[in-house]
Image (cartoon, rainbow, N blue to C red; front, side, top):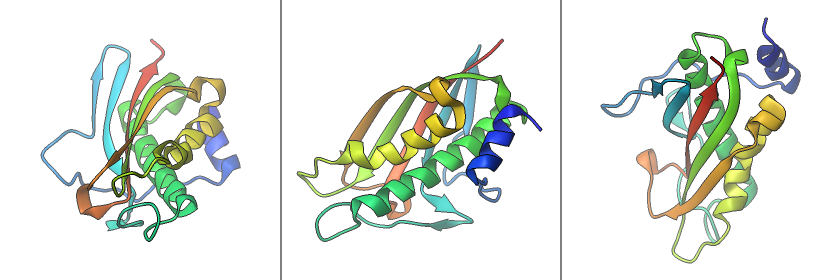
Amino acid sequence: MGRIDQRLEELGLVFPPPWTPRGAFLPFRREGTLVFLSGQICEWDGKVTCVGPVGPGGVDIPTAQAAARVCALNLLYTLRMACDGDLDRVSSVQRLGGFVNCLSGFGDSPAVINGATQVFIDVFGEAGRHARTAVGVSGLPGNASVEVDAVIALAD
């Protein structure tokens, strides 16, 4: 068992069951030492775990942060495939892009995406710190509340 697999176990984090992309796209693309991970919604075992807009009258921020953590676990699952099963090959998390399904005027998208950011920092330590965007949008696939994508650097 590798260092990162041990860390995941210590944190009590588990990967989702195998899944199929919702569209005609690749779950990841590698170019040299970079891995581009397609956006992952908060879906687990074929079901969207958090539905609808975040904000007043909708999904609260702690629930949306939990949905962002589900997105991060889906990304780690895909990253493991891109690393041929060895997450110890990750040298750094370069960037996360976060999308929050919300109503116009919602200003707390960064707080929501912190849920995903924290997973990467918890798992990879300083190598998990990344550049990031957190954008509010009017809709996501499956009416999911959150979607996150990532760019990861691997060691040679």
